[in-house]
Amino acid sequence: MHSFISNSRARAPKESSLTILLIASFVAIGLLGIFEWRLREAGFVPNVRDSMELWAAQRQRASRLGKRALILVGASRLQLAIDIDALRDATGLEPVQLAIDGSSNLPVLEDLANDSSVTGTILVSTNARLMLPINKPDRANEWIEFYNESFRGLYSPMLEARLKSLVMEYSALYSSAIPLNLVLSMVSGQRRTNPLYLITKENRERIADYQLVKMPEFYIARVLRHLGAWDNRLEIGTMGDFNQVAYSAVESLPTQDNSDYLSQIANVYTLVRQIEERGGRVGFLRMPTDKWVWEIDEKKYPRTEFWDLFASNCPALTFHFKDYAGLNEFNLPDGSHIDKRDKRRFTTNLAQILGQKLLQK
Image 1 (spheres, rainbow, N blue to C red):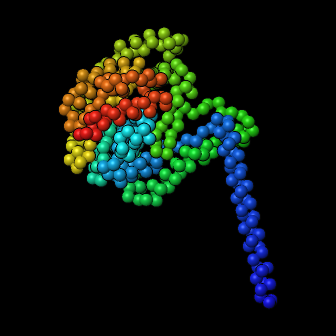
Image 2: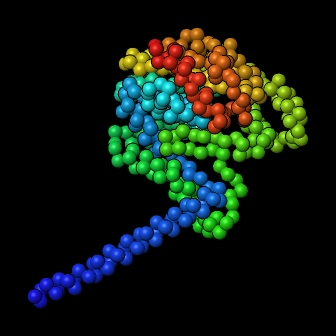
Image 3: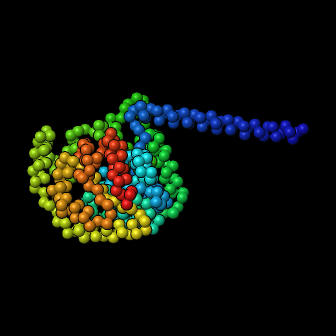
C-alpha cells in the first residue's frame, strides 16, 4: 500500500510538467501565428531564398527522374517566364528548374552532359552573349561544384533543403530576414513601403509583378544596364529624352566579332550529341525580349551572324521567339522578362511548340 501511494506522488510532477509543456507550446504557436498574420497585414509575403542548396535539390531531381524530367537551363528570363504547374500539365513531364539568375548556361549544360543518369528532355534558354566563353568566375560553376561535392547522391541534404524551402513558401516570418525592431514596428501597425515584386517558390519558379515597381525608371535602369552604361548617371527627363539617348547609344554600338562564338558553339554541339546518344533530348530557345533590349542585342549580336549560324548546324532543335507568334506576342515591362500575368499563357504556348517539335523527336 505504501508503494502504491509513493508511485502516485511520483507521477504528479511528470503530469504537471507535461501540462506546462503543452500550454507553453500552444502559447508559442499562438504568438507565431500573430506575428505571421501581422507581417502579412503589413505587406510581407512568403518568399523562398534561391540558394545553392535549393538549386542542388532540383539538380538531384534531374538525375533521378530519368526520362520523365523536363530540365530547364538558362538565366532569369526562363526562371521568371515558366509556370511549372502549367508546363507539367501541358507536357506530362516533370519540370526541373535549373536556371540561375545572371549566369551562363554552358556550365550547367556541360554538367548535365557529363552525368550519364540524365536522360530526360533539356530545354536551354540561350542567346549570343550566354553562348560566349566565360572569362570570369560564374555562379553556375560554384553551384555545380557544391552539388557534386556536398549533395550528389545524398538524401538528407535534399530533404532538408526542400523542407526548409516549403516552410519559406508558406511563412512570411520564416522566409523574411527581418530585424527584430522592424518586426515589432510591423506588428504595431506600420506597413512595408517596398513590396517585393519578385517572389521565389519552393520549386525555384519565380514570379515577377511589374506593377509593383516604379515605371519607367525600372525599365530605363534595365536598358542602361544592358547597354553597360549603369554608372553613367544620365539625366533623363522624359521617355522621349530617354528614347533619344538610347537611339544614339544603340547606333554607336559596335557589332561583336563572332569568331569566339563560332568556336564555342562547336563545343555545344558535342555536348548535345553526348546527351542525345544516350536517349536524352535537347532544344535551344531564344527567349523573348523587346523594345530597346532587343535593339541592343540585335545591334551587338545580329541574328544572321550569331543565332542563325548556330541554329543551321545544331544537332538539337532550335526555337527563336521571333519565328513563333505564340512567343512573340508579349509586352515585356522591362524589355527583358515576362510579367506574372502572362507567364501561364507563355508557358502554354511554349508547351504546344515543344509538343509539336521537341517532344515528338
